[in-house]
Amino acid sequence: MALTLYQFPQTGRLPNDSPFCLKVQAYLRLAGLEYRCLGVPPFKSPTGKLPMLDDNGLRIPDSSAILAHLEASLGERALDAGLSESERAQGLAIQRLVEEHLYWALLWMRWIDPAGWPATLKSFFGALPPGPRQLVGGLIRRKLRRDARGHGLGLLSREQILHRAEQDLATLAALLGGQAYFLGAAPRTVDACVYGLLGNILGSELRTPLTELAERHANLKAYCARLQARCFPELNRA
Ligand SMILES: N[C@@H](CCC(=O)N[C@@H](CS)C(=O)NCC(=O)O)C(=O)O
Image: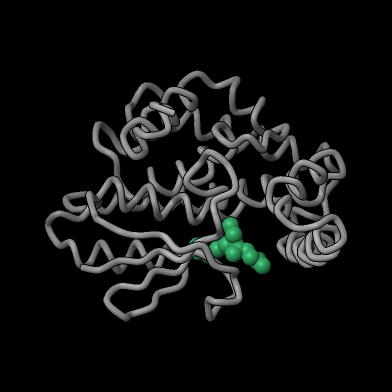
């Protein structure tokens, strides 16, 4: 397999500050697959979003489609091999909580919240001169504000969004309990999904109010550190 991951250019210490790009990298590391990364703008992907994987010329946009493709290629070595129907259902429910709800709270805190925006602008567009930085950053911010309203979470107040995120994080902490990973002793695809977002909440230099909310849960912090050490040991050495 010759795998190339198209993702946003790396801007901080994490392999990627995009939760969906970090998810795919975490999966590739957990599955022990060799890959290379290319930093590109999102319009390079047919969906206008990243990540996208190139597997020997076959281009696959969407992190979940990428994981499904790789799981099918791995057969018995797939991360989810041997899971029962009920475990797969639990994994999907957790994934949806993280990607279809908590993700939007992080997006809002980074991109829309006036308190978070200056740090986001600097982190993602700091390489641009001040004029283009404001222009390009502002255009993307406007699009993401529209997207967050379309999703629905972006129609709520800041306090309501924080409350929802607090509920999501407490739910994740309760579901994880004392287990090493969400479905037991071994990491599965759901853990790549959760780490993509939780790694961004807890491990990015781009701190938001969600960082403190997540830090209240010792088991989520330990889980994140466990996955980071397993997937990206180079970060622990840095
Ligand atoms: N369902 C997609 C979501 C990917 C996604 O939302 N990517 C974001 C970055 S985290 C993106 O490319 N946003 C660019 C945009 O919306 O313009 C997946 O799982 O890959």
